[in-house]
Each structure stands twice: as C-alpha cells, then as structure tokens.
Length: 129
Image 1 (cartoon, rainbow, N blue to C red):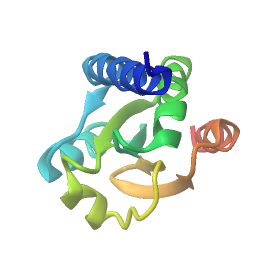
Image 2 (cartoon, helix red, strand yellow):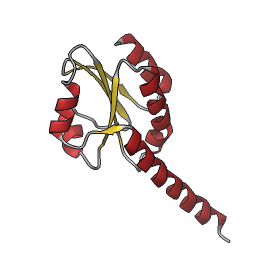
Image 3 (cartoon, rainbow, N blue to C red):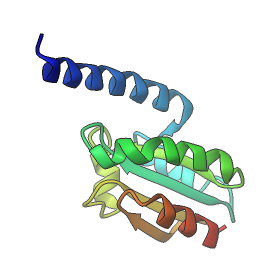
Image 4 (cartoon, rainbow, N blue to C red):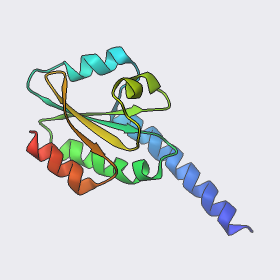
C-alpha cells in the first residue's frame, strides 16, 4: 500500500468535508450585491470578512479559528468569500494574498490583516469593536 497516496487522499477527503461544514455554518458571500448588502446591513457594527480558497494551506489552518472568533466576538458579523467562486469581490477589494481578512464598519474598510496570524487577527478585531 502506498501510504503517501493514502495520506494525501485522506487529507483531501477530510478537507472537502470540512469545507462543506464550514460553508454551512459560516455565511458565504458569493456576489457583489450579497457582499455590499452584508457590510452595510447594520450601522456601527463590525463586519469581518475572510477571503480564502480551498487550495490555500494557511486558509485551512486559520479557518476553524476564524469560526471560533465568530462565536467569541458575537457583537460582530463574520463571513467568508471564496476567491475562486467570487473573484470579482476579491478584485474589487484588492485582495492579492491569502488569507486576507478585511474589517468594515458603516460600509467602509477600516482594517486589513494579511496572513494566517490568529493573534494579529484577534487583536485587530478587538481594537475595532
């Protein structure tokens, strides 16, 4: 038995299932209209958006932590944008590296975190609540 092949196949299968669960529990923004409606839906509220892709290793690492933060910071609204499915949104907001987290208030971008640093993302969310 080729264990490397088995391990790769198992990892892909697990990630596929994880991705499906994540998409069910976290709001996915697929169109510019959905995105704009979301970030403008509640004046004064903080909106945190995760720009990610299935093929991005660091995105997979920070994904579960992002979900935990959505529960921890319940006064903010969290959502995800899959850049492969919604490239127009990522292009409009200048996303050129993954993962990228954009924070909005009153429809305006107020902060950006590039990379999978849980500490930096958590601190940025806290400082903008």
